[in-house]
Length: 412
Image 1 (cartoon, rainbow, N blue to C red):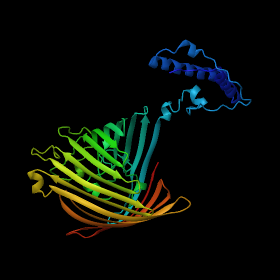
Image 2 (image 1 turned 135 degrees about the horizontal axis):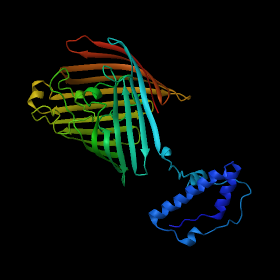
Image 3 (image 1 turned 30 degrees about the vertical axis):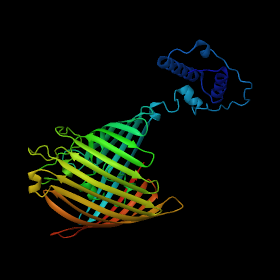
Image 4 (image 1 turned 90 degrees about the vertical axis):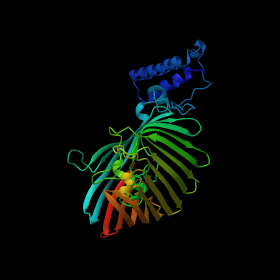
């Protein structure tokens, strides 16, 4: 590869910087940066031929104005001298984002809570190696005797390989369900996340390990991961609760392991389907018996114009005499959620939805739940949402639990 530093480029660069008021000291720093780039190139690819470094190419005509066109590769003159290189400054490779949501629940439960404040910090080391991280504060205040928690939900390195294949290692969200990986408040209906994906999946669920993703040109995708396992308690008020088994990669017991696989399909016209499985070598490692477990599930999403539909089913099958004795060896649930959204010329939109959920889970004792939710979302812009819903939870032998809920959320 040949590198030419032309006299015309230097002349034009000098005239441009002079016109913009750049001092000689700043120009010297830029030239030093360019020389460092040349030295870096030579270290990586070997010395440049001397005649190529000394080549001076005078243009046939020099533009009368001092306006400098960017090089054909898209690198700006500023990038050339300041070392940007089209995004080589560290801060140009780092991005931040996040989301948050405030909830007001009234009825059988009266409380206001800033449920989540989340910050994403991502960094691109180069075109193939990237960092993704997610930091969360729940319920505003964390500490001894406080309701909140500070959590690191994601922190993994992703390696982009050839032909639609990527690998990752670190702490990541398990590829199951609908909400577990995409749960920003402006992306779903309802103030609270649905209970099937809270009690059964259990969202939000992250583990430490390694994973592979393969995307094909026909809309099919595959995900596979080997990672840390759940550790479900078998005693106490939360006995046999799947959700209580999340170790959150916090000095987690690594005696046992788990694996997750998923197949995805997106037809490009609003239909998205997935099937997933998770195997736990022992879902209750503190129990002396063998408690291997298998989660199977499927999810569907469809959007055609304003009409939308979501559905999900998931089921745990757990081995072991203690789970069977507690009627906790089978825990399952599903929901159906139709919706309709109207969009307006000013960029805002309004959507209404209804959701029917049916699920059975164990947390100390077994609960069989039917749940009905109706509500409305208003998006003044796509990244901000105001929500309201009415929820009725029915359980045999108990009075109906009715709540009216309001929320505001955002993501960026």
